[in-house]
Image 1: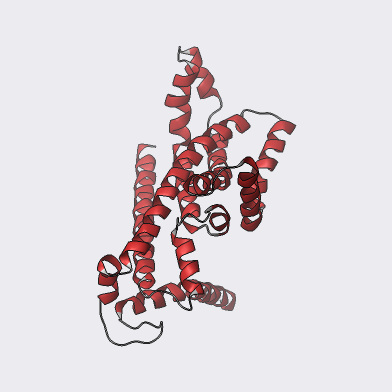
Image 2: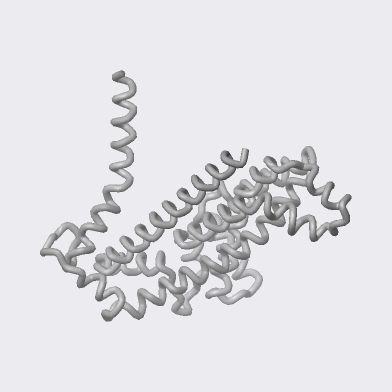
Amino acid sequence: MMKKFFAQSYLWLLLLMLYAPIIIIAVFSFTEAKVLGNWTGFSTKLYTSLFEGGVRHSLIDAIENTFVIALIAAAVSTLLGTIAAIGIFNMRGRKRKAMTFLNNIPILNPDIITGISLFLLFVTIGITQGYTTVVLAHIAFCTPYVVLSIMPRLKQMNPNIYEAALDLGATPFQALRKVIVPEIRPGMISGFILAFTLSIDDFAVTIFTIGNQGLETLSTYIYADARKGGLTPELRPLSTIIFATVLLLLIIVNIRAHRNAKKQQTQI
């Protein structure tokens, strides 16, 4: 009984430590105070200022850049990761182990090392740093995570259905599109979401590949803002909106997954 009590207490304490900063930011997003922790009364002025105030132009531009780069990087890395995962899965023995090991190296490698390596690569081959280099860098470090998301779905798939599709007259591309892709689609969706999240969250790789042409993402904007001596108050409502959106999407995905599981159990 005591062991269960301490285990639950530890879990709740851990959750409190994880979510307390987010809750504090959300609470103080509804006050006009410039300094976090100074409550001056309930107000939605920061939310209004976020979308209509003077900070809107630079901050909204940074948000737009962040989401556009994340969407492009996630889409391309999902495509490349799917092809790579299928290729690695069809290898045998030492070749598969070697390729899996090589795929895991960028995941385990510190982001700052990846950023410096890509920076030196772009400088060496003479690519001007800016939008293109940031997108390429994000694709490079997101793709291994997509491969990692898809591989378990390939291992769960019946290995005979592809051969059966070929025997029934399907071309290799038709078998890939109509047989393999539907089987691994949940892994592809998970990989896309993971790549999208990693791209939005990344700072170390972005700061080394963004160049000096004035391009800013949300992470570099916050970094530059912090170096000025403090964070813009409008970042509090922005953080709250992003957190609420992610939480809502997570709830919707879990509800759909629960309903699909119930349908499958009913069919069985």
